[in-house]
Image (cartoon, rainbow, N blue to C red; front, top):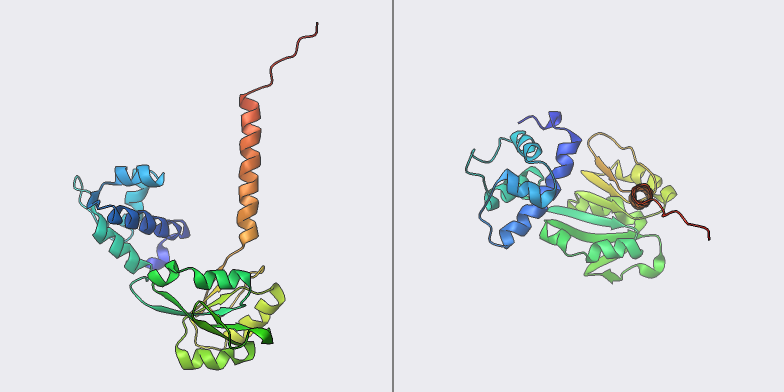
Length: 224
């Protein structure tokens, strides 16, 4: 399997497959066809088969997919069969909410520490992890085998801390700062722009309202 040739669109659908299959597994569904999965996910059955064929197929024609097996195999493709140690940079409201989200732990993502420039937070804990001074982050990463740094800080701070992180032995950055970070190729970066998602939602609201107004024209008024 040459993962370099798999499109980002296919990769982007894998977490959805994993989530839906997990729900089906918990409901006791042992087997599912591409047609049945299509109804659940609103993706065509042919697209589902094409996506799975990139990774070997997983099923047999006329027999469908073993739900638990497919769930576990997609989990392996996503790297969820491994443990990932994470640190938080920015212990504000968003960062604190991420640390408290227990589903990350269920997926193998473990927050180990938080870092901030606010001295009032030093030594305090968020959901069991301690907040440390930001200037100690490099030493902590080197001593604790950290894989992922999660940034929930302003744009200017994110650029500066990214320079520091680029010298550390981390594997990835999950970036919520309002800027796209570019780092050495060995460090994977996922830039998350919450405002972009909200603007797309706003666009969809406007589009739906405009289409609805065209489909249901106003009734003409009659003068007496």
